[in-house]
Length: 275
Image (cartoon, rainbow, N blue to C red; front, side):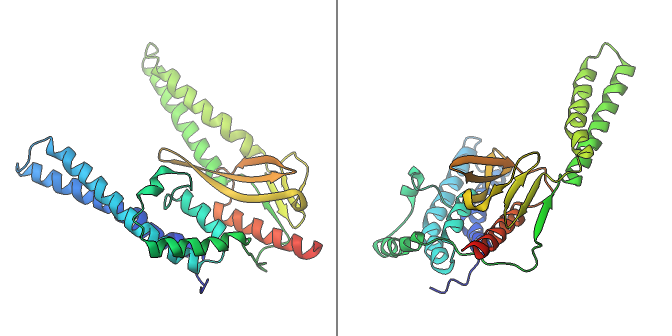
């Protein structure tokens, strides 16, 4: 096992065959159906057949390539726990207890390879220090997010006032005024608050107006990606003294990838200085 591929590289390669290719097949089938319908070679109801056919072919492609990707990725990536978690987050694979795993096209040789690779999950993921990371990192609210909220607040308030002045009996202005006030209500306190929302260093993690949580009592820390339809939210998740903790980070001036890197580095520094 070479273990010379990063988690990000493995995820990127997996997306090509397990996300983009199935999506391409669906779009091609629908496109062909639309074209045939345009030149009047098929009836309207046949569009549903093409859509279903595209979905089934896309699922077949995923079922075939997913096992191949798993074997390659788990063989060549050292941190298999992180890889598996991010593969599930990015919709490359399903959780172990999912019924959809039964649709994988897998032969005896593949089963034996995957069973052998399960041994890698008995070892912890390994991370290293990074000299480019400072002794302490202060994470504030994102200025771009605050500006976005203020701009939309001004926009909706302006529309609401305009509608009110044009026709006070058109109660649509209440909707726009409410939206504008909502954006201001969420943005102004963040604009005024110049304190870091998260402080992270080799001692631990500290949230705004909270006491320090020491690395000694923190475990299973990672950034979780949660989907709700097309919308995605990110949370810093970990256990502290056996209690679940999570913090919404979408409005902070840091990417999920960068925050995970910081946690790995500061965890390594803590362990080096204490063990």
